[in-house]
Length: 365
Image 1 (cartoon, rainbow, N blue to C red):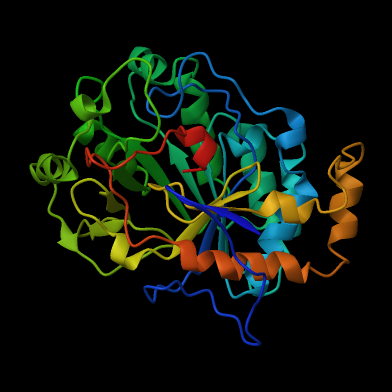
Image 2 (image 1 turned 180 degrees about the horizontal axis):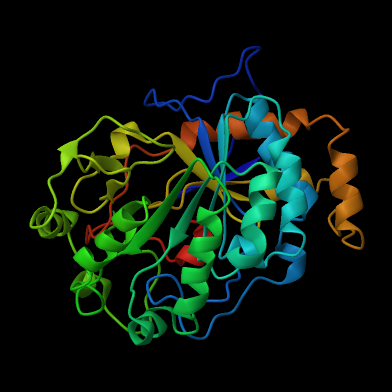
């Protein structure tokens, strides 16, 4: 197996102990995996993509069956939470069939999804029926013109309708994800918080990360600290610290008397790498061990060993057949071996460290 790090390429033998554990060399237990199902999206959010994007050719994108095989391998190795991401996962053809297959995996405690919400009017109910427990919906403004500026192609009314559709489907929780950026939407912190609280939704504020080169702004000039966001919210709401945790790194507060939780994901101002419990797979089969580093393992090469052309003519039939076949021992061994490449932490904005060149749509969030 070839594993790529920031500086070197090395070969690691495909071996696994008789009782494999998803524990990295810093003692962190990996029990949460994010699977990107596409690098494409119907939006072009300024912090995620450039305006003119070049997407992966179809041959480089994993099939539904291959994504399922990776998800199944992880659950058989003890992972209890899977999240489907993109790009925008709901633009992937036949994604509901993949959700259904993953939802049947033994040992999976939660199946999660992150979406921009534009497809939820049609897809919220099928997603819930297929086994999705919790859903995150990205929304960065409640002003239609500003929303269009941030997303470039998105329509706010479609997202708001999607949120309402999801509210009617009895998900365990619905969380709004918001990236606050100076000069874009930093005056909407309370407006967005009010919107979530009035509907009993969670909301998480996420600091912008320097992943790839944004085409219309300098990230270091727009990044907004969550310490400042917290101060704005405390002007209106009493926030109580809580030990609530979800699959990811959010630090949550509760508002007395309200169902909503206010979360903060603060990779820039409050490094949470010491508790990192997750890895990500990009849609071309690259297992990323850290969002902020290039350490990775090529799972596609293992998935396609002996079948590099990968017949795509009947993805649905291949997915259905895959549920009856055992997972490759080589795939599991590669995943276990890759855990030793998980770095201790990210190095965002450190001038003497090479920053990732991939944009968020390639990473899966």
